[in-house]
Length: 343
Image 1 (cartoon, rainbow, N blue to C red):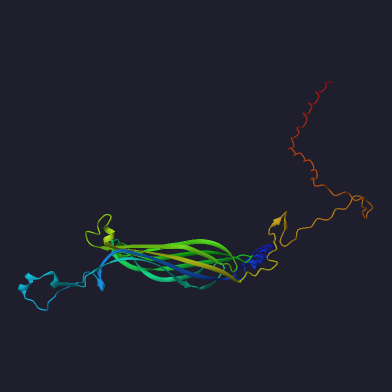
Image 2 (cartoon, rainbow, N blue to C red):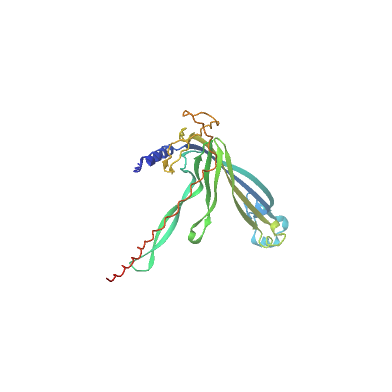
């Protein structure tokens, strides 16, 4: 509630201003389409030493005859020794390229000036330790651990604002975060990608935001000790694996106006508030100039109509002189009486 205590003129002006402002807020529905494009490139080349059934040396050694004596080992020939399941050498050359798309299509309805929020992901607890004194004036040695929950994933905040020509301004804040690893004390470290922007769209127009790319690359090499360490030929005797993973976030926004601001004709008419030359100017239309009469028109009194005055200002009367203070008037010196005459 608003209570106003003032003159009638100012209360009338305040009532008109409040009636023009106190209206229901416009509402907007925002169609949000979230797409995650994941491209994984895998390249693998080099020599791999393995048997057909597994990885590593898994061969077997046997003899051609079923039975033998220990003294016969000295007389073994090459034809009597059979090696089976020898490891094979496979030269692997592999390249894959895949794309995965995950869609989320929510509809957010909000009023003008109120932020609409969307969260896609999970909340991760992060420990926070503070130290408090054991006693008054003591040393701060008692740790107290609490947990703060961080939103990990895609976080979207959109604040709309409508205009009279069916345009909608969107203040968009997009944040893409993930757990990138662990730091000191096994605490998690977070990777963050964010965008803050303001866009202006027509009712039903679609805008696309993209470019939040995350690039992860891993390399693994397995090979024969000694040979795989050679400067130039080493990679040929080893198994090299390089995996590159690129993740991009593509976001489309489409605003749709549901309810507009209820404006009336009197809300768009300008009016003046205040005083000009001592006269109130609230809801008083400006006076329109009268058409000038041609010279020579007769007046009801029988006179002749004078031509309208020109735009030049009338001559001002001369200023009166500032009166000076009156000077005191000295009386005339009295004449001394004549001396008495003798008899």
